[in-house]
Length: 250
Image (cartoon, rainbow, N blue to C red; front, top):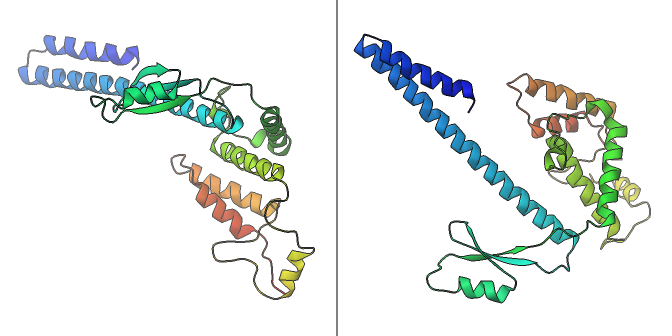
């Protein structure tokens, strides 16, 4: 809470002492007390949120490191109590599991901790390629309200989703041909049958969004920004799908 709130609480109690009317003084005193309670609750909530974000961020980094370095061995095994408190750091899993197995440690668990290894070059290259693509493609339309260097909030939520999709694309490209054999002119042959290619819940859309799809996206975003700044990716996505050109079966 700000110092102004604390000053307001103090001023309220001081005013209550100066008032001659007992009822008015009691009312002011009660209001000041309630305001002080709200201040304490807000401070506690802010601290809890900060701690939760720190835990989530560390967990996210651990998952990313494990994916980037699949053959890595944990550097530490942490014994975590049933209340989520980190109790003991062990060098081996056997040591940690021995502590967990004690009858007076019900609900205890073991958490694997990896120290930060050097990031694979491919991951760094993909991130650089992604940001270069976004800068060249969208430039000033990128929302940078949440820019925090080194944070997952470097971009707004839509850019974070785009980065996740980009990583999935990179994983597929690195995976080779995959399990599906390539059928020459397969799309054309399927269309020639006259059978709709889309299945329920799916729709064919261009690889690159058309100008109509982009306009629909921005219009949908403006609609939700006018409503207390709320965003709905589903609403924007449906608007883009509705504006997408339709593939007609032959």
